[in-house]
Image (cartoon, rainbow, N blue to C red):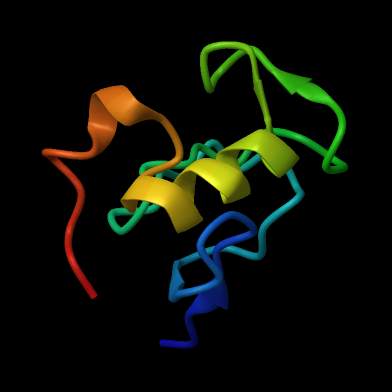
Length: 74
């Protein structure tokens, strides 16, 4: 089955195409797919924007600091 790129960490982990409100959670960064652009506030992701989640992933390996100990390492 084809995998799709997570909009946050850019690993090919998603079963469905992102940005279609799939609410699928990436096992690598724990981003839940629910927004349409980088600046939209994501309620499913605790009020984070995709832009901030990407910065967090680059800093400590998860979309939000509270997930850094539960994500899968690639």
